[in-house]
Length: 182
Image (cartoon, rainbow, N blue to C red; front, top):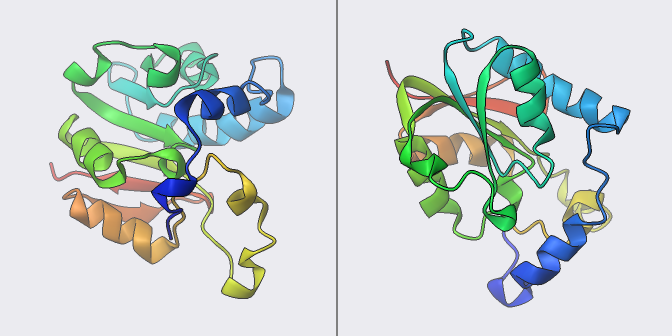
């Protein structure tokens, strides 16, 4: 499901909305939330592998968590001018934690990211799948005006296939791993 482009926020308004988030290293709840993603990533790579935190946010908290675990992680977020040139490199893992629902050029961005993976690389995607249609109107995730793309597991799997990747859920319900061939 997609929000019509005419209803998208302007980029400046989107950035202003993010300013109200408490996505900082001192927020213990946020650290726990990101820790789940870090655990999945940690299980996929050796310390010498390269990771890209795509859509890292202004504070790049996930990047910091991964670096604290001894992993090589680059933060990238065009809204905050982070990681200029990062998309010129190739990575073993690219993380989209609560990012895919914001992408304005969804297919183009996903195909581009898949092309930045090294052989055997993976995209780690965290997003909430939409509930039953009867619950959709009250779903908090759909009420966030910065969220413009919504998925069910079959559509995530389809998106992975469009990118030439295979899809599998992780042990954490809202995280999936998209893999390139070796």
